[in-house]
Amino acid sequence: MTLDLEVRPPGQATPAPRASRRRVAPPWWFMLPALALFTFVVLVPSARGVYYAFTDWDGLDPDFALVGLRNFADLASDADARQAIWHTLLIAAAITVFQNGIGLLLALGVNSLIKTRNFLRVLLFAPAVIAQIVTAYLWRNLLGPDGAVNSLLGAVGLDSWRQDWLGDPGLALWMIVLVVVWQYAGYSMVIFLAGLQSIPREIYEAAAIDGTGPVRRFWSIVRPLLAPAITINLMLSVIGGLKLFDQVYALTGGGPGHATDTISTLIYKDAFTLGEFGYSIAMAVVLTVIVAIISAGQYTGLSRNEKAAS
Image (tube, rainbow, N blue to C red; front, side, top):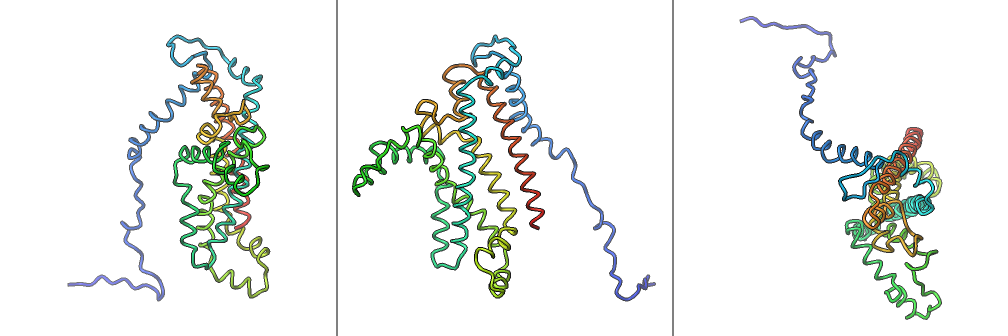
């Protein structure tokens, strides 16, 4: 028996077997079932919807005609639609600022070494797992003219503070923001908390030894390392605010008047109340374009900041 020995210079690693170094690409047809389902459920209905945006279809009559860009021209001259677009942008901006600001403060609080931190994390996150429609109806009862909020104000002698919270055009929009922030601030908190817990404690200790104050420590150390969590939270809150429907419709129905109408509620009303499906789908196309443009711009800016922070 002969031994085939290969002499290598000292320190040179033994090469791995050729078979283990070969990268095996999975067959492309593995994705065909998922791609077919996605095409059937998402792409085809979306394409048909865009087609109906250029028609006068009422949602029931199989006979309809192409009207070209008339629906989009009507949308541009519709005062209610312009007001709904403004409400949508305002709600999305307010939710993004307050939800993430409060979520970050909560995350910083429960990331400390207080004994009840685990209980507080569960308690603050709990509203996020409740169905949106359930939360909206709960708050509608609380904020009603005879609801718990006004009853509590009357019980403590603050009758002058009692309001028709959802019936006042100047307050109703902000009550919607309040409900959404109450429900999802804990969700943002969890994402921020995951980012905070990925920061090694040694960094905090080194900064404290150098005499860095809490504000400077957060701005120079914590904020750059939280850049990925900030990107995720801002993207989720902006997109969610732009598409908001359940809470608005359950709380106010878009009222009083059109004081709280968003693009989503106006789409629903035009389609299922007025039977103007072609016009409502044109409005949905506009909403899709708005979400896409804002999301793409936001992602580009946040990605740059994230790379700069790293």
